[in-house]
Length: 499
Image (tube, rainbow, N blue to C red; front, side, top):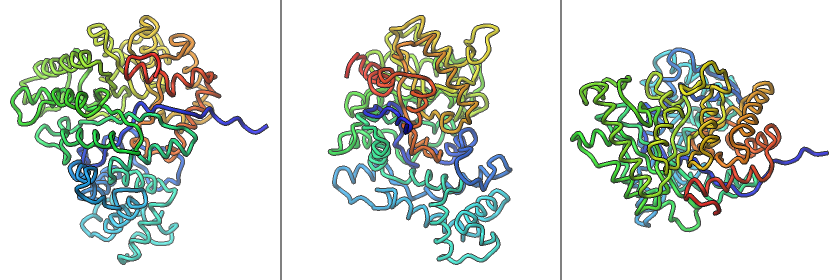
């Protein structure tokens, strides 16, 4: 008999991203992601990212590609309002291919970008992917040959080809990213009835004096316009909130109040909720005498003062979320951290005091399912998976089944990359979680984490492969899958039992 196709139908993508390079502190962001979340298999390896200088060289390449080549929020607002014509290079994957190929070609022939061991490795990888290894690094490259090599490298199955296509996503209009994500789901047989894209705000954790090219106020405006665009996929986004930015504002630094922007986004621009990113350097609650970036503690006068300022900002955003009946989604994996051990600040154990103090909050902890990180709230003497972040969430859910506590299965790369033995181990932990803590599966939701997932070659098959894992490896029924794919999202977003 032919192999059964995984369950298909409707889905709500509860966690996605539609930002481009102007919305981010490009160099700091891409380096943080590469160091902790780069692809490991599924393509021809040409580089070892652990080798000296290679990550820095890839960051330089990313910055070279996107600088001046990504539309700002203000530019896209003009397009969406009909004031300016859309530029083809930003409006489609084909346009991104042409743009990135031109930029990579200029990188290959630009002498000032060719120094250092890491740069030589990256250039060598591009040339190997673009010539099948027939051209040496020291061979002279004309502009025409460089363009041919760059285009072939972009289209290749080499690791550098995966990276280049991912970099290209950061040069796009946000509305075109929304369309592409919906098409990716549809290609696998899933109709995205809603996509919930999250803004992010990382800038102040890298440098309190710097900011991004597209101000957050304009990011809110453009995403509101994208959500209201006729014919586009249905969107309800999360506005980012950085408690450090709010604390700096309250201390007199120039700029707007992020708290007021959150309220404006939800009341006036159709946003559904709020995005928090603890791995930048804060716990969800009870911050205090823990390390922070030196420039931050210098500004506030010490660690304790910094912690108090962060907690004051967080208390106010939780109060606002309750008053607006708005959900919160938060990064909850030990990854993408701005500082040493900052990733652990997303530990679900740090959320328990929040839920106790704000019991009406609805919170989704993102990136559930690895069962490999030990929680500070683990039972004494326990071992994985019982000591994992996931089981700490489960224990809370089991004690409080009606609580607005959820987790999403976004960027579940273990399912994409795991060999048979690891996959079986993850499935056993997942089945144990469901049986012990959430047998009706009312607290888990589907999410893609796209475009962050784009640095995995298998991202085009994500929904299908995740559903196959849940259905075949974990033994979930169609009814349980429908809750994960659609119904639980209604409860999380609106507090409603049906949508």
